[in-house]
Amino acid sequence: MKRPRLDKLDQRLFGWFFALSVTPALLVLLVGSLVLSRSLDFSGTLGPWGRIADSGALLLDAVEASDPPPDVAAAAAQHRAELSESVTLARRWAFIGERFASVLPFIALGLSLVLALVAWRVSRRLSKQLARPARDLVGWTARLAREEPLPEPSEAEKREPREFRILREAFRIAAPELIAARDRAIAGERVRLWGEMARRVAHEMKNALTPLRLGVYRIASEAGPSLRESVQVVDEETRRLEELAAAFAALGRPPAGPVSEVDLTELLQSLLRSDTAPPTTYEIDAPEDLPLVPGHYDELVRLFRNLIRNAVEAMHGMPADRKIEVRVQPVAGANGAGPAFVRVDIADRGAGFVDVVDLDRLFEPDFTTKSRGTGLGLALARQTARAHGGTLVAAARAGGGAVFTVELPVAPR
Image (cartoon, rainbow, N blue to C red; front, side):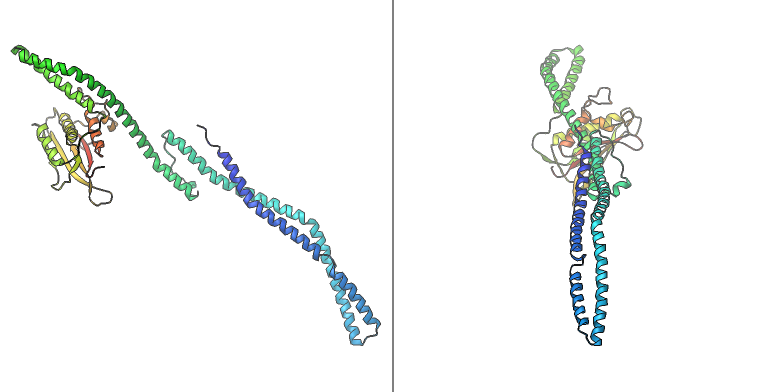
């Protein structure tokens, strides 16, 4: 993947900023210099002052030659002095104006260079300030691709434009969501591949089990007392293989059929009575007004049966405290308008997860901690929970043991 040339961004930003700052200033200097030069050319020379001085001198000479009265002669003499002083002052300003007009282009050029230097520094700094966050965000995309953590917020980020701060915050929010989405996609693809393979295996197993079951039935009807025990073992193992084939066939296949309203309290009580036996005991805590859960009844039975049987097996061989604790409670939604989920906690006092570091591995189809386990039970349980819009997670229980938590939505999703 070719990375964008951010140095080109620096150059473009600098070019635009420099042009927008220098061009108007240069135009103002140019127009001002031209107007000032024309004004000096028009008003800096003697021009009208010279003509006034000549005509005034002729007039004063005529007045003095006509032998005027004393008061007129005094006024003419005073006017001649003032006229002479004005002409002298006009000549001085004409001299200064001519010299200033000669150096005005150099002054304008110097101001233009100073202004261009200031504009260059400001434009360069501004372009770097805008390009640096963009460069950082490009680097962040590479970090996201490599699943690397993003940098922590710094003081420099607080001085950035608000839009860049919003983008950085969006990146930080999206990073864990992208990782979770990638993990879900990988897990979904793994389950899909396992499901496809499992269905093929289940098909082949069923093809072989059908004549095997018929053969066991015929042998059982004709076998003598000495073979009955062996035939019973074969019958039990073929039944177990049939259950295993059914589990393989169900992996990766969504529930089918109509949805009904399920009373989880009644379902759990029925399973606890049928799947537990002394010395294992159970206790269920559920409110009377628990909302019904829409779902596929048989699939939910298989889900909770797997969890209850796992709890029973986890406490097998323990001398005491072999008790399964089940708690059912409604969970309010985000708006607080009413219950959005029904939460079921199934806890035991078994050995817990001693050798399992990542508890999510428990739900992988190829992972099991049992000597004769297939690893399909919990995988199918989570698949059923997700197919109903819910979740299934595992956690270690304080004081030893494990707790599996199922959350199912009250309304269909």
